[in-house]
Amino acid sequence: MIHVVNVKEMNYPKNWEGYKSISDIPHHLLMFVEKGECSYWINDTHITVKQGEVLFIGEQLSRQAEPVKHAHTKLSIHWTGDGLFQHFSHLQGQALLFRTASLYNYLKQTYAQMFHIWTKKDMYYKTLCESMLLEVAVRVHQEHWIMQSTGKQARVVQQVRDYIMEYFREPLSIEELAQLVQRNPSYLITSFKSYYGMAPIEYMHRARITKAEELLLTTETNVETIAIELGYCDVSYFNRMFKKLTGMTPSSYRRQL
Image (tube, rainbow, N blue to C red; front, side, top):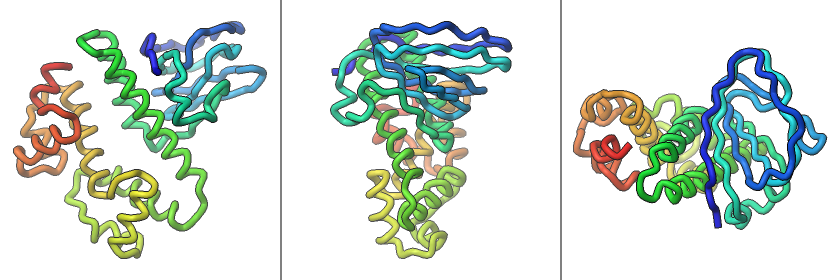
């Protein structure tokens, strides 16, 4: 089971003093540094977490935060239970850094959503945060796995993924993406699925909808303008895609959050 106990957003000014060694913390922590960087001593291991990176710290591990001269912002989710270790057993009893700068926008938005949901405390807010925690853990591990891979296939899917994240607002096609890496479409689809669990075009739609969620949450831009900005000329198609991937319409999403 996973039992989320807190979701925090922490904005520290310049010359943060850090804190002395503490231990016996009864929960796990998955922290995302949105801005700046910070350093910790965790069980005598020194770890510096930079902007866009994620740090996991298991329960009961002693930790000490070093002073930081520059302002920094971090968001973290705290939970108890071993539910996550059923999927990622290597995390148990560890402190691990994930270099996930390429997921910056996704992590920034997802952590902001978790914080908003946790603060508002609507019905099933804990369940929502628990499911989002699992999704973040999966995305972080996927990215870590690809970054550690050195084969040609890994480099191909990484190049395509990076291209999608830069141009997801454009009308991309599988033929265009395959030509980019000089592979045939069927090879690209199969390879991409083996790393990300979905085809490249579905990944593009998910990137678009993730951005749409952010815009609905943080701006007052109307749905039609958001749809056009994200490459959907047909607003009804955007609405259907949004509902398919989130379970609700854009208007309902904005009202609830």
